[in-house]
Each structure stands twice: as structure tokens, then as C-alpha cells.
Image (tube, rainbow, N blue to C red; front, side, top):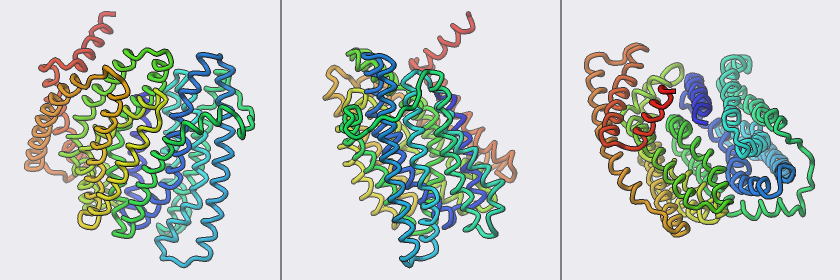
Length: 508
């Protein structure tokens, strides 16, 4: 899962590099990114978010209690309902956008954003179907191929910039439509990527009338609380982006590049682990194996904190060299580098918190409780919206980063407290002890990275590509080496288990 996600995230980073060179952090870039957030809202709402969280436990239970045919029937019922709901939303939205663009006067940036949204919005239907198919494959124990489906978006998007965009017109406002149409092509590729695997497993799509279907009713009933939480999050993101778009035209693009950088370690390990844990924890919960449930969740949180604590401190200390190496070329200049680096420095401290929220939320989902995470999410999102609107005027994209880090911490703490009340005998003592050790190791690694960066800048600088690479990887390698040696000296189980695994493989 991590390997496939690493490939996808690296291609995603290459896509963002191509985007940065093509459109920088201009008003056109912000318009494209805001427009793309809208179909993403519905994708996470109907596909990857509450629907998947409600569907997978039911799918696993049907498979365990009634057999494979019942599980496939469940999948077909849910897919049929999803197609009806998503198609209706697409039709209404496209009609509304067409009327607004035709009859309501607006400035050119807003018109471009809405026009791009009209092109990209059907992506929502395609990727929602893909998300459910991926959930089915994950439930059957397949993770690599489903995780690779995300690469389709990145490959198509990169090709659209390099090959198609130059033929779309002379100006950036014309060429940007190549990216919008590429999103639709990628949606088709993503929705069909996992289908052959499921076909070999025995799945055949059959239309099942969704209205009045008891399975669909059960999924809808369970997903409504989670939908409120996911909707609150996505609407929060969209509101902040739209508001920021009018405060300064570069804020959305600058902050989005920082988010993409943080999502690399978060996706490679945090999201991969959370994706694997939902069917695993669901299986343990369905068999009433709550001791194993607690142990699996706790161990997952420990590994998550161990990996992402180092990633967070490196993103903070080396933010500007990382942004400079990856993005600073073409339309993305020195000023754009400084703006995105500042956002990343403020956003990265929340990496461990945000990734932990995904683990805690999936523990609730596996227990059949979607209401508690939704309530906590809505509360935290209200706090995030308030802080963001206060800070964005003065601190621009940095204010958005601070708001996200603070509310991710609040979300994690509230979920942990709620889960402890739900799962008796769940103890966070070992996690807290390990957290203190990781905090110490992270501070040491941060000081080493800061010192290494200072020495590199003083004697070498970043005048060419090789120097830019060294400016990132030399301090990062020194810091990571100190972090791992310190973890070994403290006998942290994550390092010791890894070394034991390597020794066992070598012996075999």
C-alpha cells in the first residue's frame, strides 16, 4: 500500500512541479485550483468519505455472514444508488453554472473559475464510482493495484500540460482548459482501472433498484452523520479558498502547493495506513476481537507518529530549499517560493495530528459509529473557519497553515478522548511516553538539519541544480541519521522490529 502510494504521490509531486512551471501561483492557477476543489468536495462526500466508511463494514459483514454473492449484491445496490444520486447532482450543477455564466455579470477571474468548474464537475461522478470499486478491492485484501489507480490523474494531467496545452491557445487563460479536460479523461481512467481485478474476483455489475432497497437505506442511514462531517470539512475548505481568492489572488495557489508537499509523507504512510486499517479493524470488530482491535490501532498510531514526526520537522526546517528545488522554474519565481515555503512551515507541524485523525476516525467507522467523528469534525471545522478568516487578512497563506495545524491538534485530542470512553481499557500511556521520546528526537533532528542547512548555504549555496539537491538532501540525511540512531539508542520498538525483520530475512 505504501509502495503504491509512494509511486502515486511522487507522480503527483511531478504533476505539481509541471503545474508550477506552467502557471506559477498566478490568478489563473488559483482559479483552476478553486474550481477543482468543488468536484473534489463531492468525491470525498459521496466516494472516499462517508459512503466508503459506511459501505465497507456492511460489505465485510455480508461477506462473512452470507457469502460472496451477498457481498456482490450489496456492492451493486450501493453502486446503483450512487450512480443515480451523482448523475442528478451533475445535471443540476451544470445547468446552474450555465445559467450563472450566461446571465450574471462578474470579473474575468471569477468567470474563468466558474467556466473551469463547469468543465471539470462531471469528474465527480467518475471518481465516486472509482472510490467504491477501490473500497471493494481493499475489502477483498487487494491494496497495491487500487492504490495505483490514483496515478492515472497524475499521468494524464502531466501529459495535458506538456502536449495538449500549447495547442489550446496563446494565453494561459486559454491553455488552462487543457488541464480541465484532462481531469475528465483521468476520471474515466480511474473508474476503469480496478474493474479487471474485481472481474477476476467474480464481481459483475448488475442494476439493482436503489429506492426502497434495505441495504441502500442502511448505508444511507449510517453515512448521514459522516456525510455531515465530511461535508463540513470540504465546505470549510471551499469557503476559505473562495474567501482567500478575493483577499489576494496568489493565496489559494501558494497554500495549495504547500498542501501538496505535506500530502507526500501524509499519503505515503498516513493515508496508506489508515486505508489498510479500516477493513482490518472492521474485521476485528465484526468478530468481537476488541483486544486485538486496541492493539492494532495503538501500534498503527505508534508507527505513524514515528515516521511522520521526522517528516514534519524536516518540512518545517527545510521548507524553502524543498520548494525551491521542486517548483522554482518557469512561471514560479523566487517570490512564489518564499510564499509557498512560509505556508509549508506553518502547515507541517500539524502533519502528525492530521494523520492521527484519519486513524482515530477509521476506528470509529469500524465500530459502526459515524456520528461521533462527524460531531467532532464539525466543531473543529467551525473553529478552523473562524481562525482562518481572522488570520488570512494579516498573515495570508501563513494564517491558513496555522489554523489547520491548531485545529488538527484539537480534532485529534477530542477523537482520542471520545474513543477512550467508547473502548474501555484503552490506554494512551504507552503512546504518551513514546510521544515524549519522539518530541526529543525531532528537536535534535531539527537542530541538525538547521545547522547543516546553514553550513551548506554559507559555503555552497544554491546556484545550480546539483547545489539545490544537496541543499535539501544533505541536511535531511544528517537529521534522519541522527533521528534513527537516537531511536535505536532509546530502543524504540519500531526500529527494533524493523531490524529483527531484516535479520530474519537475511538468515532465510
